[in-house]
Structures are given as C-alpha cells and as structure tokens.
Length: 438
Image (cartoon, rainbow, N blue to C red; front, side):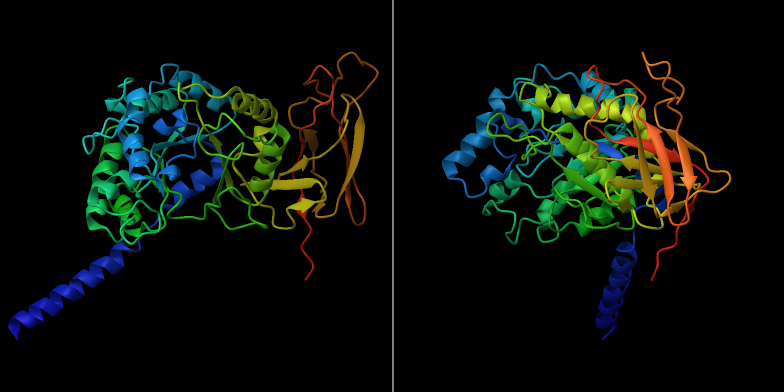
C-alpha cells in the first residue's frame, strides 16, 4: 500500500509539473519588439538546391536508390564557393528588414552547421565551412536580428530508425518519437549556445509542443514564431488578427532555388503584400532561395532592391506600427497607425501613370482631422519639383462633414521615366478615428 501511495504521489507531482511546464509562453515584451520589426527575410537553402527541386520533400515517396543517392552523393558536390555572408547581410539590411530566419535544418535532416550529432552536415562537403556561423556573424555586423528555422521532422533520422520517410507517419513527430525528441534537443542546444544569443526560432512540424516548451524553459529570451503563434504560409488572412502573427511567403512558387519553370511576383505585388500584412497587424517574412553556389538569383535580387528603394522612402509607415481601430482599408488606401500616438500612415496603392509633380486628391471617411493635424508625404519635403520651379507641391487637407480630403503631389523624382508605380505614403498626425457604426 505504501508503494502504491508513493507511486500515485509521484504521478500527481509529474502531472502538476507537466501542467506548469505547459504554461510557458513567449515573453510579452519580446513579442512586442517582434511586432515592431514588421519585415524579415526567410532563407531556404540546403544541398538539394543543386537539383533545383523542392527542398527536402522529394525524399517522400522516393525509391530506396533515390534516397541513398540523395543522402550520400549530393553532399559530395555541394560547394557554395560564391557564398558571401556579408553581401547577403548588406542587401537584407538595405531592404529595411529587421530580422533574418535561416534554415539550419530542413526536413531532409541535412545540417547547415558544424554539428556533433550527425555526419550529414555541411562540414562533410567539399565546402567544409560552418555556413550558419558565418551568416550569424555577418547578420550581427549589420545589426540584424538572428532567427533559426529548424525542422524537428528529420527524414534522415527516421530513415535510420527504419521508419517510412513521411511527414504524416506516427514516428515522424518529436511528440511521438522520444529518440527523435532527444536528438532534436541536442541539436538545438548546439544552435542556441554555439553562436551567441539567438533572437527567433521557427519550428516547422505538425507537432512540437514538447520542443517549444523545452526552448521556453531553457532559452526564454528566444521568440518562438511557428509553434507559438499564427504563421500563415503563402497567404494573408482575410482580416486583421491580434498580434503577434507572421505571414511567410515566397517571391516565386518555390522556397528553395528553382532554376526552371519559375514564376515570380513583381516588386509592386510584394510591396503591396507587405502593406496589407502590416495593416492587418502581422509581420511579413519574405523568402529568398539562394543558388547552390551561394549567390542570390538575380530575379530575387532585383525584387529585394525594389523593396529596398521603397522602404528607404517609406519605412516609417511599416516599422513600430499597429492596426488602426477603425477600418484598415478604404478602396486602394491602406492604413497603419504609429504605436504610441495618433499618427496614421495612408498607403496609396495601385495608382496608374502618376507622373512626378502631378497632384491627386483622395477622400478618407474613417479618419478625421483636428486643429493640430499635419500632413506630409514620406520621403519628400513638399517644397520643390525638380526642373519645375513654378510647381508648388505642398500637401493639403480639408475636413468635410463626412470625409477628410487630402491633396498631395508625388513630387520626388525616383525613376528616370518620372513614374513610380509603387505606393505613395501620406503621414497624418494628431488625427481622430471615426468610430465604426454598429
């Protein structure tokens, strides 16, 4: 009887411990900082970029011959001799991104760092250098937050265990496979102790609560995104969601490098997606898929630099903003609000053939001006239009009974053809929001 009582007491204490353990969450202040960032860069890169195939997933349903050649032959030809982490970091910084999330290990199980847990890693390639460590150093050099993507699902590991390679099998998840759970913890301990403070982690698996709780308990200063918050993939929610949340999306159709049959979104579309996501209260994690030699494909670089130009002008309306308390959109106009004050940013999208120096008027029904309201266009001084001295581009506003009229000139010369197709952003200070009607 005494042994039975001890056993029951032990079970009860264990259940209480699990209950308390399961309550661990991201630190609220760190989540606030995350929401302030607004824009991040995702990087999907592994040794199968050499084939231009979907990252990792080609192993599912593959023949034994394919799997063995994938794991044993592909590492022997992976040699990213053009990889320049400083160049990456400079470009990402220029885009206005605040953080970068790198795929340290995707579902295939190939580790892009110097790990002691498996030989299936970057050190056992002709390149033989710790890519993760090199990138982390460069990101910090340019004051970018460091994020690690990590897949607790590991096709190489479960294959060695004798299980079918799949994402849906009973032993593919760390919550069901104890040996896989212990293996994942050892790898995370390497990642989170060998490279200084890591800011963000993204767990890509169907079930990972035990691993998330492990991170919260041992590394509480790391913000867990997927695994802890909503992370819509390749889509934007229909309406605003309470933060924090993060949409992750590709520039084309594939996460990793796709040299053929790829269709890219244009820069204007990506900028408009960033605007929509921020207006709805989320972060935009936009993906880059480097070439196997370490270079960023020119099509992706072009879009990154188009975003860089736009953010250089308009980043104030993207960073440290929240959703407005009324409607987030009127027609082609999107709104964000400065976090600590009644300043609103109006993103004027989808304006065709708006030439430098020409004026356009817009009506806002959800916002009212006060006696202290001031208007300006981000990036320009409202004083001069180049080569057009008689044009006075001063911004104006007028409060009508049911709407606020704003009158602005797109005065800044950005492109040689004097047309800039991307959104113009108007800043309105000391405003009032019209309360939505029930």
